Amino acid sequence: MSDRSLTEAQIEDVRKEFDYFDKDNNGQIDMQEFIELLTILSPKTKANRVKEGFDLIDDNHDGFIDFDEFLKWWQEGWWEY
Image (tube, rainbow, N blue to C red; front, side, top):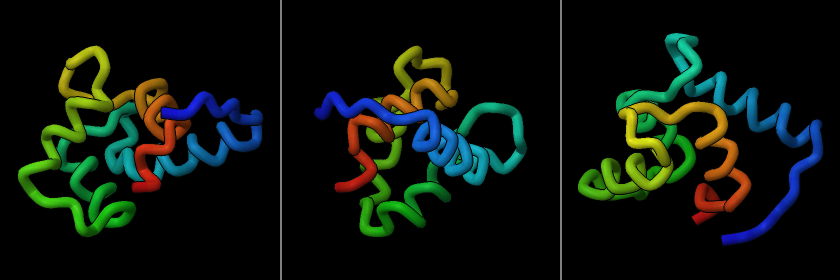
């Protein structure tokens, strides 16, 4: 994990990414939207790892990834692998 600080402009860019994957515009990424995200960002992800990845990002375990959780994940750079 990394302790990268993001500028306001970078946070705005991450917000745009989040909004792109939040297809129903409800402020959360559900499992189906997460699968679509992985198809683009990490196409080689094995199907059996999808739920594990989702659960790692979903800090409060409510079944959705909100922007704060997404931002934390993005800032830590997990999406780069």
